[in-house]
Structure formats: C-alpha cells, structure tokens
Length: 197
Ligand code: GRF
Image (cartoon, rainbow, N blue to C red):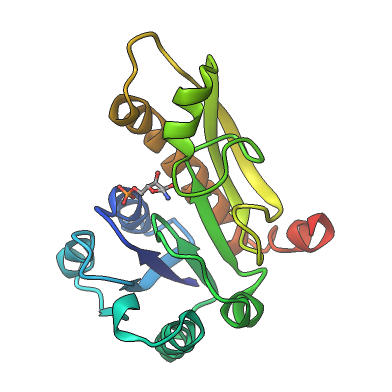
C-alpha cells in the first residue's frame, strides 16, 4: 500500500478528491499525513478522514532553507513513499526536492510547459487562449519544469473568469492526480519519470 503525504496551502479540494479515492479498498494508496505551510483550510479534510496533519509556517523561519528542512523532517516522520504537492503555494528548496525526487509530484492548473508559476489560470485567461489544461509533473528545482507524468487540455469558454476556469480545470487535475498516484503504487512510476528527467 503506497504511503502518500500531501502538502497544501489552500482549500484542499484536490486533496479531498484523493482522500475520497483512497477510501476505496481497491485503490492501492493511502494518505498518511497532510502538511501545510500555513493554517490552510484544507487541513480540515485530514481531520475529517482521521489523519494526522502538521503545519510548518513559512513565516516562522528565517530562511526558505530552514523552513524546507523543518518541512522535510516532519514529512520523514511519516515515511512517505510519495509526496504530493496539491495546491502548495511555495517553492521547495533544492535540499527538499533532492531528498524526495522523483517521488515528489505536483499538480498544476495549466498545460505545462504553458503558463507555469503561481498564476497559471490567470495567465491563460490573459493570453486569450481557447484551451489551457491540467498537468501532473515530477517536482524538480525549477518552477513547474519537471518531467510531465500526465496532462490534459481544458477548454477556455467565453465569459470565463479565473474562478470559473479554475473550477473547470480542477476536476481534470483530480482525475489525473488519482491516476498518477495509482501508477506510483503499481510501480509503473517513477521508472518512466527517471527516463523522462
Ligand atoms: C490547484 O489547482 C493546484 O493545481 C494549484 O492550486 C489549486 C489548489 O486548489 N496549485 P485546492 O486547494 O486543491 O482546492
């Protein structure tokens, strides 16, 4: 059974979808801990599912490196086989990426390498494209630049604002994430990821 740690910063709706998927006894992965860089609303999902959680507040540390070390120590306690960034709005320091890669993945609401970074949905709208997407990638030291494990196009519709478009993207992200986690659990990944990187 694959042990999955999930890191969030926000509402955790993608986390919630993964938690619901892991409720299926046939699904070969379990979330063992939920972590956050702030008092994220999504931590309530861990409580709903009776899971441990931790918060490593970014603002409590003198540097990103020290924050990252504290985060990695908390994660290591739960011995995750896979770390999932699902709405974590912080760049991880290289030492943390090195410690877990390629068993650390991120969901992103765009068709990478299009529109990387913290505002992928807003940037796609601003660019006036008629399709954007969702991607699941292996985290590397860059910004949403790691090997792509799964991605799918999502249409931009006339009248879309950032919220409407993001809410159309998220269900696709969730489906891709649940499938990628399954592929780690079955051993199909990260073999491909290592050839991709
Ligand atoms: C997701 O679209 C994720 O890809 C992006 O932030 C959003 C988080 O949404 N980084 P939620 O917190 O899972 O609702």
